[in-house]
Length: 415
Ligand SMILES: [Zn+2]
Image 1 (cartoon, protein in one colour):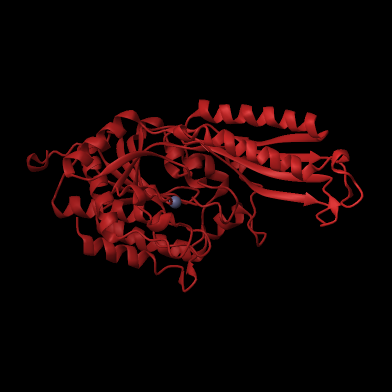
Image 2 (image 1 turned 180 degrees about the vertical axis):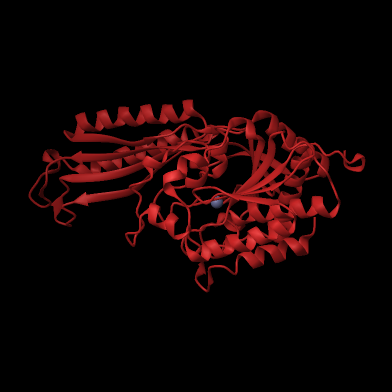
């Protein structure tokens, strides 16, 4: 693997959408499409064939000795949030390109074809829905479910696709078959502080957490903050606060299973200093990779809601906004990644991913593995997001070794 080439490749992609405030390379914008064009040229220069599906997923393919065999695939995304950093998504794509360059340079042949996939619209920044490309590719979402999506400028997803010469009407044709891919790997920055704190080079992802989300509307009685005695109050905000603290406690009790819970938004009405709040709305996000553990937190949440309703004489309406299942990574791939780390002397830990990735959708259809590399200070979706080129190289090397293993190298020297 060529560290200089890897660095150069990263810098070239990050010229697209660069500004002093960070990188803005939103899905289906001219900037993003130019960056894709640049990468497609790089893949073509390596002799790969390119297929772009109806929603803009780019599939670059290096043929195997037996083209009928399922492909070994890797990939990630190059679209970003507003004012993003240099590494989220992009690292997984350029590492895939470097793997291909390495194989070509050493004239390494594989039985299975190898694919590098650049997934379209991974970030929810533009249309409010994440991982659209991989969801369409794996049939997790159909075109009818995408028609209502609109960005902040009123441009629909359909119009955005049209502007890039893609066709929403044919979106369902982007769904791939289960026998097309043997294994899928995504290399990604951790976007959290664990690897840096533990001083490890690699995180082998065991599962990707899925959110269960609630909106609670708490109704009490609005009253004068001076003339209403404490014993006569039905304070909606205090009820919300009690629920928030009990939820935090419930999640702490599940810390060993990695479950987390957050009240990220609270709206208090009337919202005046001298009025006992008659109404409060809170938004709750519970995530974990253990369904059972997440369920225990949800059950405790329901219990505390009931208790608060009774003890504080409040009415609480519960709206479940979503309830998604955590995704497990493939056991054999986890074991193989561990073996390769040990063989190469890479320090590693097994860990869960708190954030969603394209890999979680691919895992619904194909044996999937995910490799994390450290993020400085755990920072991400920020212009100061940082992972050193040496850290990326370790991840890319692990990716290369795994792909060579899964795609079955035929050159004796590399077997
Ligand atoms: Zn990402």
